[in-house]
Image (cartoon, rainbow, N blue to C red; front, side):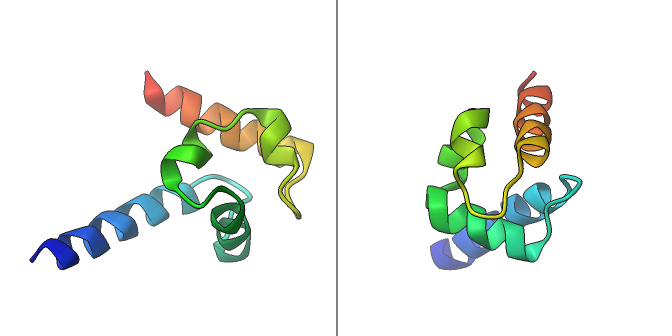
Length: 72
């Protein structure tokens, strides 16, 4: 049961990140390879996001703003 809960939790988090404009499955995969965890991605600043291959400064701003708006 615990394993399936973990899978369901990951799927829900993935779908949340895929809602960000400009982030598809390929960008999501690149982000996760760089950050390893969802929490690390959520806590990243714009300068760190830009270091990910394929992530432009504009997209980094969008990702950063998305997580800050949803934290409130």
